[in-house]
Each structure stands twice: as C-alpha cells, then as structure tokens.
Image 1 (cartoon, helix red, strand yellow):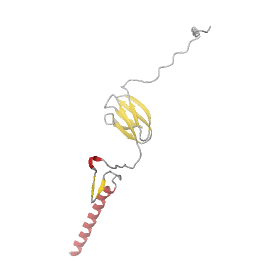
Image 2 (cartoon, one colour):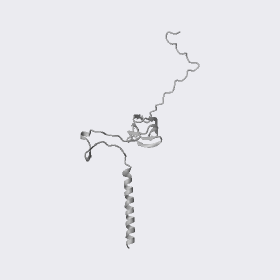
Image 3 (cartoon, rainbow, N blue to C red):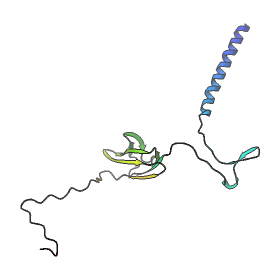
Length: 156
C-alpha cells in the first residue's frame, strides 16, 4: 500500500512542477523595457506630477500610415492580403519598405504603391468609387490637310 501512495505522490509532484513551468513561461516572455519612475528608499514609485526619466522600448522602428477613405466599410488590402475595414485602419504602423495598398468598395478597386519610412508618417487618401485619375489622352496629331500653326508674334 505505501508503495502505491509514494508513486502517486511522485506523479502528483511531477504534474504540479510541469504546470508551474508552463505557467511561468509566458511571464518570462514579457516585453523588456524601462517604464520610468524612480527608486526611493525601499519602495519603487513615481515622481510627483509625472516628472522624471522615462525610457524607451527597444525594437524595430516602424512607419505610421494615416488612411483616409470615403467609405468606412471599404476593405483595405496590403500586398494582396486583407488588412481590415477602413474604419478600423485609420492609423496603423508598418515596417519600412514598399507596399501595395488597395481599397475595395464593391467592384471598384483603387491601388496605391507606397514607401514607408521608419519613424515617419505617411498620409494615404483614396477617392470615391468611380473616380479615375488617369491623365487625359494627348490631343490628336494634326492630319495632312490641317492648317499650319500660326507663327509667334514678331516673326514672319
């Protein structure tokens, strides 16, 4: 009988230890950074009125994109992948680089190619559906029977 109780105690202790390891793993993966404040005697506190040294979070620098869309329900795609609705993506951050950003409202698709720079803001505006920003076609070339162009003033 005592042998069974000892083996149960060992199994129980092993289960408890494995649970402690599993629970403590996310705590060890928390973001490292300086939050600010001061060390005053035996207590950690914050200076009066919020003054004092405040640090930074180490990590990769990102660029900010401000998105303006005429339809808040427009779907926004970044490099062909759905990023969300325009209402939810008014401001978002991307790693530096080139991106193809699309707005889709029904069957209307508007595309813009942007370059995001670290620690900089980029304003991106889309138009209403159906608005085309292609340049107007050049005027037709004069035909063989066309009248000659008038000479500039002062020349004959």
